[in-house]
Length: 359
Image (cartoon, rainbow, N blue to C red; front, side):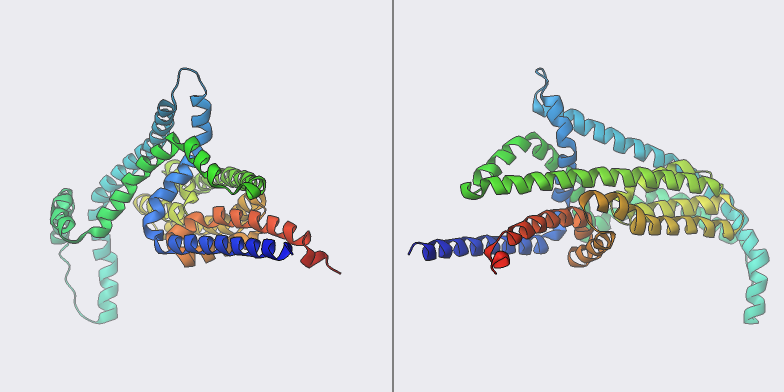
């Protein structure tokens, strides 16, 4: 007589948890655009927490100081990458100003006759006027920020929102790292006691999978940095080292490393090489690198570590990107790892259930 009520209560509890999960998924879908800085802060906090924990175990160091030191080191690393980029951009800009008159004169002597032959119209080209026009606009580029201020004040919600989101990342990361243990303790207290051991087991598996994911992602970043530096050096590109490092380090955000590296390498190649064939060669390097990273290296180093088939990794990137945009791309593989752990435990429960074992 008591079996039916227990089964009913169990089903009712399951429905409650499924409803709660559905609400959480719906909120994530609706709030995806504003969750990106908090998710990025959470990922960085998860990566840095082991180091913060080790430092805070020292008797003379409070956790807040440990958090400050770790975030300071992360800021120093980011600043180093920025210091690598800025001299490159400055040198390329000065080279552009220097070589622009040569390009204009070359276009007048080579391109203009072809245009006249194709159109049948006698075209005139004042090279000096064009040089003065371009150079005067280039020199006035320093006032771009001043010209943009009225636009920023009138209708630039997207730009301001992006800056606010960027500033939110270190703020949210600091509080997450500082209160990490307290947050975990409060979450631990909310776990139903009769499910406590199972949920802790699943959480431990998820933590292990995510740690393997991060190790695999770091391996991808290092390997792609080596690839871009080595292959770009073979093409003879002068700035192969900084461009390759930046392109490789940014692959943790899908497509960002390739787009940034390709833009910088294209500009450097145009400045350095006299013919367009060398620029095409640089484009080929990045195209091959994108295919190599997306189809081979990430599925191999990340997919194998978290137990996902390479096709499942590619599908996860496409599916979560389609559903949640950039926010989904950022979380595709970690969420897939969590779903994988849930499916493993669900499969084990199904194989041990009466539904499977009943003759």
